[in-house]
Length: 67
Image (cartoon, rainbow, N blue to C red; front, side, top):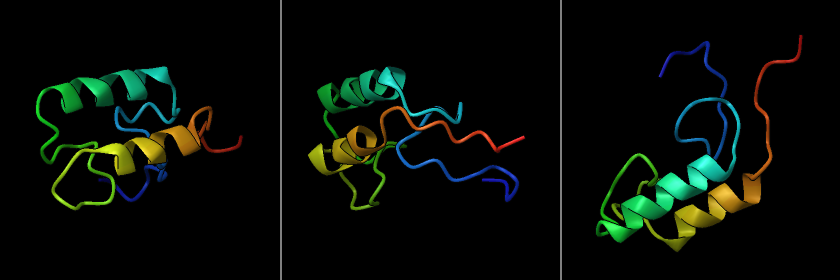
């Protein structure tokens, strides 16, 4: 990840907004087996409800830098 890209917890698709797209894509990964993925935010080797909680806790966050 480039240093110039702000950290945006719960934003996997890197559009700097935590939204339903992130949640929908997370759920696709879980249905596929839930192994480690880009959605494994706590890096424990599983994509599970702990990672979903990160998305849900940050839903609606817009991480674009202030002008």
